[in-house]
Length: 139
Image 1 (spheres, rainbow, N blue to C red):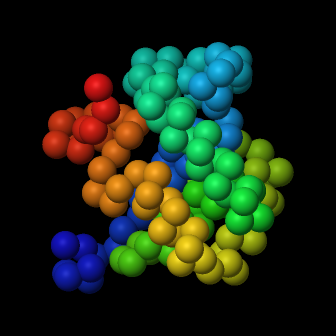
Image 2: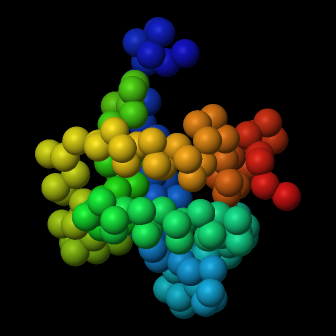
């Protein structure tokens, strides 16, 4: 719809609150300085076992393609049709420096297909659409 009407799209949480950047593991509890721990509530609810399992596979996929997971997540979002720019909130200069090269990168079509195989387009695994029940595909 946005593309049809020439509207800008600025996706929020392109790294799924750090899950797609490898900041969370389905094998270990979240780090003490994670948003899930520090803020709790809705942030903790978004870190789900199904989301963590997909994130783990995404991290491995990114590494197979020679990308840092955070770069892969931002690149995938940035190069989707109709996207103006993903909104990324680095918590440190080092995080910012890691993602700046994404501006000059182009999404590999094979990587894009592999990502779509992880989570089908139009669906969701983790609850980042808290008021949109129609988007939910998790138990």
